[in-house]
Image 1 (cartoon, rainbow, N blue to C red):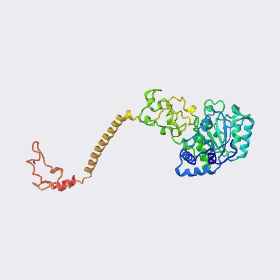
Image 2 (cartoon, one colour):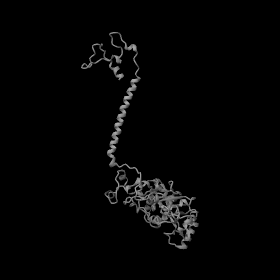
Image 3 (tube, one colour):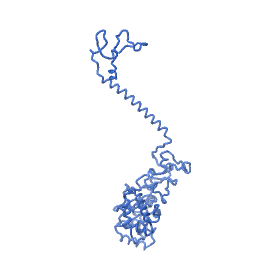
Image 4 (cartoon, helix red, strand yellow):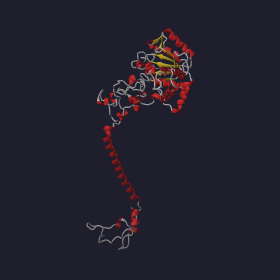
Amino acid sequence: MNRDVGSVWDALQARSVSRRDFLKFCTSVGAALALPADKTPQIVQALEQKQRPPVIWLHGQECTGDDESFIRANNPSVTSVVMDVISLEYSEVLMADAGAQAEQHLTDAMKRYAGKYLVVQEGSVPTGPNAHYCTIGGRSAETILREVAKDCAAIICVGACAAWGGWPASRPNPTGAMGVSKIIKDKPVVNLTGCPHNGFNAVATIVHYLTFGALPATDALGRPLFCHGVRIHDNCERRHHFDAGQFVEAWGDEGHRQGWCLYKMGCKGPEAYYNCPVLRWNDGTSWPVKAGHGCIACASFDFWDQMTPFYGRLPNVPNIPVESTIDRLGVVLTGLTLAGVAAHGIGTVIWKHEKEKRKPEHPPEAMAGAEGEAPAGPGPEAAPSVTPGQAGTPSASEPATPPEDSSKSEKEA
């Protein structure tokens, strides 16, 4: 393994990586971590000056898919050198040593870098009376994990199995498989879930630790917010089809060929939190939903039990199918408008009624004028009597009413 532990920049220079590509690498890591641009110089300084963190990579019950994902982590500028971000001291899959020589190397690394090394755990850990189901060099995976974690600086769990047990821990969990955080309680633990995880997220997590001396901020499940803070559904390139009510109804149908939403085919994107749509896989080329397969929420805890059957539709996910409801939406808006008009009319009637009640009554003496004279005020009794066919003509039995003062009528109106 890497006996001479220099800085990341030293390792990149040894591989003839240009300064330009190094700076692009730092920028891409900062973007993956969702850090503001003014933090990039801090990342550059850390990778130039600080020693690469020693890493001990342990394995449990798993398929080594997270190893495969990690060694293929890349970005457009630095494709073949991401492994130089760390000093890998031990890994059953990647190291050249084997047997007793490999186990001795693990012991030496723990002593040499006590308190400084990072542990990367891949795979679940069988526990208790079933711990023997995963044995390495005559010792159980649980025993090895406890020994290595004792003097480590932090633990990074890569993949669903290491984070919560993965499919080995699914019902009925015959080996008593667990995630690391249920076993190790006194060390910082971060969970990079996914089956497998995206390797660049692991690189970004290690760079964050190297730059700031701490693991990234996490959610309640110990998952870094920079890669697990946003729902897949919200960043999915098929989201507009979901909002429009355009769904694939059968594999290979016209909607499937047109790239419509896969929700009805079992996509779990509305319940999954990961940066797959943004980071993607294979040098940012694609991810499952873009390739035509629904998300199975592999970054969610207990997804094997909670999200199966994988092709079963999630219940009660609200959506607004625009094309199918626009006419009904217009009807609803028209109904609301008419209701508003009716409410306004009722309010006007009530207001007028209350205004009439507030009018002061005329005193009796003002209403009883001298005989042969018109009443003094314009009260109801003074209103002219009009017979059919003689609109506007005073009755012969009553004296004519003098015309009202126009300014006064306007005031009362």
